[in-house]
Image (cartoon, one colour):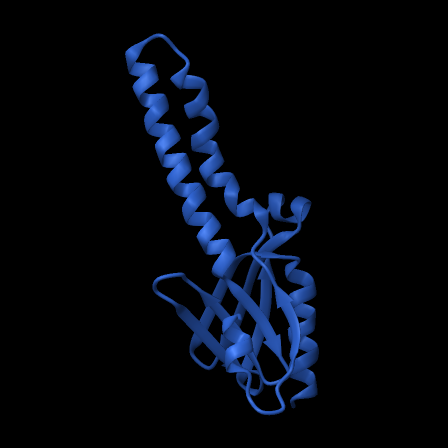
Length: 150
């Protein structure tokens, strides 16, 4: 059972669930692929460098998998919940009636592959959440719920 399902308030319903985009794996793959190529060289320097890059790539892939698997970006009719972490859990819960600004950023690759960063501002705090799949739809859902709660 997910964190949000365990902590739903009375009369609270989930309106939208966003997920971490697969693009988050591209960083570790930029280490792993050259590492596989370099490890095949007969030169011991390039071979050792290749194995080092493979190790970094595998560590990064495992880290990103855990990040993707345990992250929750959820909009309910009362709040926005951002949760990530496996051993150490970090949770940010924002009341919809306190949200002042909702924005998103998309890089060149984000526009092509459909991911971006959601930025929610409440009072003096600004919270940014990276690699959100389809950030425009998530921002739209948040804006609609904020309007309903005014």
